[in-house]
Image (cartoon, rainbow, N blue to C red; front, side, top):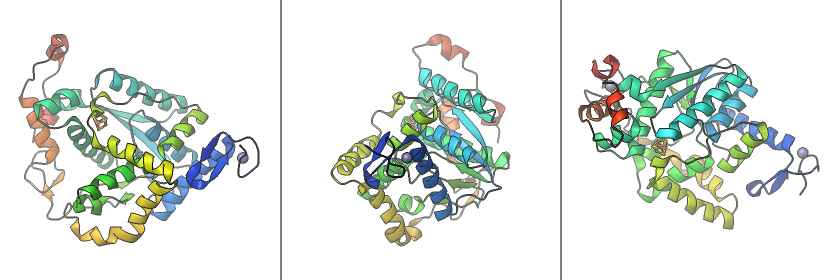
Length: 323
Ligand code: SF4
Ligand code: ZN
Ligand code: ZN
């Protein structure tokens, strides 16, 4: 197996490129794909201050590393979700990455700052864990970016993620979500700009990037992910990709270039926005979805098998309860 560029020994084959790459040229390929995505979708300017949503997994750490290598001013934000040892380990990987490079990692602990964590809060609010988790992440990353005067929030969504989300949206014809499925969401109406610079890289590539760069990351899957439909869609797309290399890329990028415009009018998400009377975030209701989640997640005291931890859990902080 020889590198397509230098004919030296290859370390990875990428079937959708019909090519193999040595370490040096694979790492260059990853950076080039990010540069291409950033330019193609006008994601970032050289002077932008960027906040990376860091989970401690391969994608967000690879993204942070690549953006630093490309010379962007990037800080990280890790959100402690309170998912037992999974969250503890994920936070440790994020902290180690930041300490090794002497870069800034902000941290928000959901339980300490808002009075609930994902396992108990989602149960108390009667929401699926991933739904409560996703809502919390979106709200708190947006809020932190605006308060910290960052120009953009960058997330580690890769090609596999985007293709799986698109597949779910198409299967159920969720046209409103399809209209918003773009590698860039511009700033406005109280939202920061949101960018996905890894959209041209698959998750096998971000994992290989981390291994070759010596980046340690959370290998375990989140224990709350069971039942998450997107994992099933990823499996289905991986089967298709095996039979037809490049199918995922064509599916997602073909949608962007040939079909996304047709659904633009379905995006009602940013119309008629007001301001949450509790936190000031943009919302279509009086109280935003995150404040409603916080209220429901902290109003009930779910029975917990670990009584020590339940007793030690702090009550909602003023930020969570105050208007
Ligand atoms: Fe959150 Fe669900 Fe992802 Fe776990 S799998 S981190 S609960 S969104
Ligand atoms: Zn090479
Ligand atoms: Zn609110």
